[in-house]
Image (cartoon, rainbow over all chains, first blue to last red; front, side, top):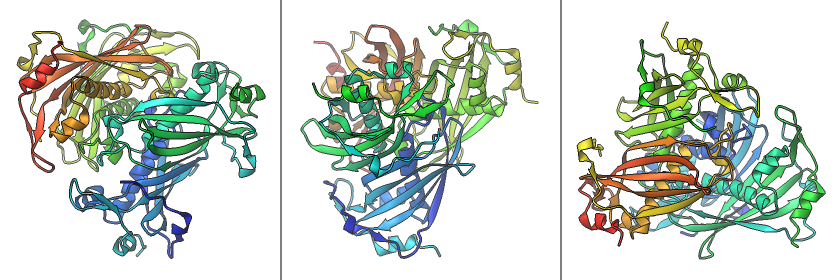
Length: 154
Length: 154
Length: 154
Length: 154
């Protein structure tokens, strides 16, 4: 599959705020580098994990998604670092849908230390992809309205 | 240390092209996820490694930098995914300085498969930081001119 | 530092059971490989993290250990796999001191799924090392009796 | 699949030395922990990668193995640490079959720095598993003689 580029015109603001989810992580010794602070790819591991948690929160756990042949590969990601984290820090990543495009969507992540200190913010742009059984070709498709509806707070 | 935000006004185009470096990576089985493609934080591990290689290429290997109390923590990073990589793919990351800011600089990375297929592009924005001995405070400083000079092709 | 080999004669059974600690981990998408099961180095990341948790449980959190110039590098580790874990599995690693040697000790780890299913067992053999300030040489030393005492259940 | 335990009686010495393979790794900044030395799970990532390289060396690259429904999950692994590695170290992992069991086999790994310094030794015990197409059950089987023959030096 070639990942179609998603242009800025594909971004529409949300009509209503998205449901958000929360993931807790403790900064492990092995998550840090010789400078004694978190090695930054760790945050993207947290962000990916947090996106799956967000979908599980609205009723789409990863194993159900896969069984339904639904995937959400990335087309872009970014991060801004605000304050370094150190071993033992208790952190929380809050995630929500920042916008729905046609076939893409943006997940916004915010990582904070337990005392509220902002550590990092970032986003992932993903495309909605389906597959009719193992070995079949992947196809990007519009995000189904019933999926979007799951993220509207009740 | 609080990481000072670096504004867009801090970015100046390079007067001349930067020296570039090349790092080779093979996509390992364990670098991939259950979808069978590279797990995306792996790219940032490659990018970070490639930045150290770029600095080693111009005569500033990591252990020398540390011995001199010079560090370069990140303030931002981003990536765009063009094509998925799979286990066994031979890849190359080419890296160069995209621009020098006052106290910050941007490293540009391009990951290609051995056959030239573009896999991912991205950048890291880092700040130049010095420390007068272990335990002393960190201070962000203008990137020294003699450091910038190292990146000018002879 | 050359890591002195620790002979089997250095192992003495515990007089009393050790305090144990518990760490919870959820198997992330990115912790798994293209076979859809946990990539096994992940378990060692859990084990290392669990050892730090064990020490924190008895009053020796990692940052206090470091400030006191106390470290515990590994001389050996092993693992036995009993059942594969998959994305989303909630797991618990229980850890305890299996034995105190003269200058070394063995931490025993047991990873179970939330439903009690045994996933993996393993151990780490570490040496007790001290350092008189940054840059000073490391020296392996007998594990202090007051440290051993912390692991005796009250 | 429940991983059948492999007893010591299942181990038979090799009649002839195995072909060995070599993998080169550079210790990355992000492979190291706040103590400034390699974070030990990194070695297991190297070992797993080295096993795939060993199989590729004899004509069984990973993607061919998968296409043939052949897998080799682990039942055990161990490591002994001899000397710490630091960022920038050039390392080589040499791997070979240490023994063929009935349905299992042991891969032996030796990690050395470019100057020959021994860093770590270890082994992986794996089982030979086949699968008749996606979604079908996995079955452990005797390692085929034609596979074993590939590892005999010509």
